[in-house]
Every structure is written in C-alpha cells, then in structure tokens.
Image (cartoon, rainbow, N blue to C red; front, side):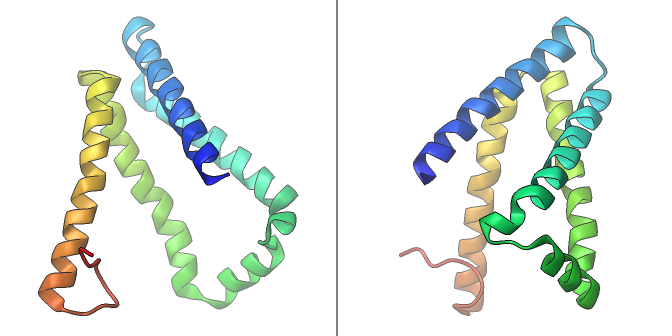
Amino acid sequence: IGNILVFLQCILSVLQDITEEIFMQAADFPPLLLLGMEGMFGLVFGIILFFAFGKYLGEDPMITLRLLDENPIMFRWVVVLPFLFLLTSIFNIKATEVTSSMTRNIWKNFRTILVWVISLLIFYTTGDPNIGEEWW
C-alpha cells in the first residue's frame, strides 16, 4: 500500500504543479492568492478528515488535543510548523512564477538531497548515533 500511496502522491503533485503553472502564467492569477487558497483548502480538508476518521486510523483527536494542552513544546511545534511550511511554499510558488514548475521540481529534489547530506555531516561530525544518519 505504501508504494501505491507514493505513486498517487507523484501523480497528484504533478497535477498540482501543472495547474499552478497554468493559473499563474496563462491566466495571470496572483501567486500568493493561489497559495493561500491551496493552504486554506488543505487546512480545512485536513481538519475535517482528522476529526471524522482519525479515531478509526489509530489517532484519537481528543487524546491529541489533550496532549497539546499538556505539552507546551508540542503545542509550539503545531503552531510554528505551518508557518515554516508557508515560508517554503512562498519560495516554491515564487520559483514557479519566475521559471516553471519543472525547475521548481528539480530544486525540490535538491532539497531532499541537501537534508540527507546535512544529516550525514551531523552524524559524522558528532559521532552521536542518536542524531544524524549513518552512511551504511
């Protein structure tokens, strides 16, 4: 099932990128408005799905809310992480506006490689097996 989900994600990502490029370059749609609409749709859709089906998929929403109430560090992450996603999305949408979705996807793959290389560097400079990632 994991491979099927990865395959579906690839298809949906391509469709999203092509749609964004058409809206921004052919229809002259404002990029940040497009980003805001995508973000609001994802937030509303995700919250509805989480509260409707979370209990059946192994994540009880009430336990999650209680955990966020009891753990201020976890609550801060839930608040800060969407802003980090927003920042990366703004850079991604601006890259699509200036170049194309193909260029943006190439840079997105470099980001994955960069995270992996930094993880290797952290592991080998600290020697701590709890952080970073070992080559083999």
